[in-house]
Image (cartoon, rainbow, N blue to C red; front, side, top):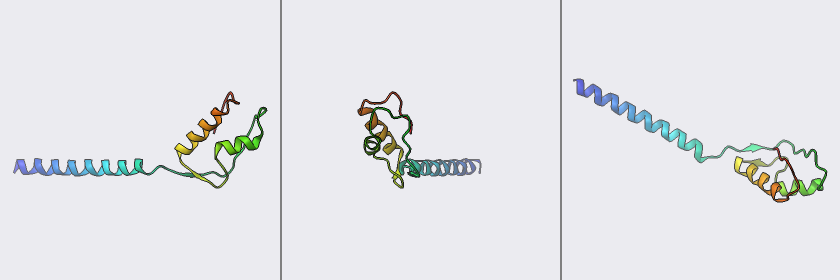
Length: 87
């Protein structure tokens, strides 16, 4: 009787463990996307605003992931026009 109880508890633990892992894996496999409501370029003195906007790849209404935002920052740094970039 004691062993059955231990086996039952172990089975419950394993079931819950794999269930939690499944939910966590599902959350990581689908990157969260956000919708851009506005694009505002401030403090620009060296480049045309449209150049910055086009190189970022970000526009109003576009759905983007964290990877898209990182790519936008990388593209802007590649222009070598800025001392700071914030998105």
